[in-house]
Image 1 (tube, rainbow, N blue to C red):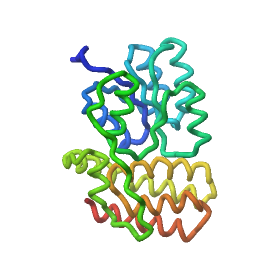
Image 2: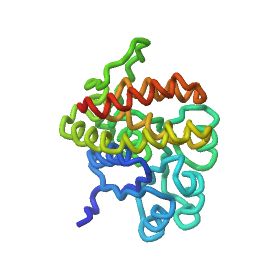
Image 3: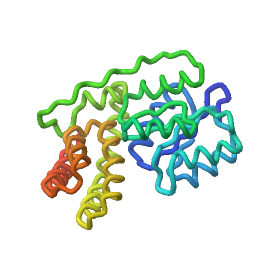
Length: 241
């Protein structure tokens, strides 16, 4: 049964690991979360009921967060909206803000930062202080970094184990999609898959894979970096945290 005393949030995210992380982060406010993986599913939910806040991925399989916001704004003009994306470029942030989003969250980020952004928009007391990001090391990272995962999930070991299980279950499919896109030279598809995977790595503390993904994002036509990514992905699946 829905609790009328807590805010209700529409979360739109197509990556299962990211959606699970964001759901857990928002529910801990407390809040109630309805999740959707596509623009079409989000439209069905958004048209059927009112929400206190929308939390939309900037990139969706069947459209964009901007498309979704424009469509739902026609029926719900006053609902506050946050965008979330794994891309931190200023022009993308500016475009999202100009389209009507109040703020843009760059993944990966701690659960506390998600809650603080939502509380700020809803005018609620801020019980969490957003954690600062640790400086990235230039040395090879461990396959699993428990400190990164603990910062993202406020030290909740149950959530960490659950999300890592989901992540390693989905990783072989992501690896195949990335390698296939690279082999046929489809850089748009390659960037899209890397974009989703990088955020998930941060949520579960897959530190070495995050390094490999970031390097391949910077040079997507590098066969050496693709081979490096492929090997690290295999190692990550084999050495579950």
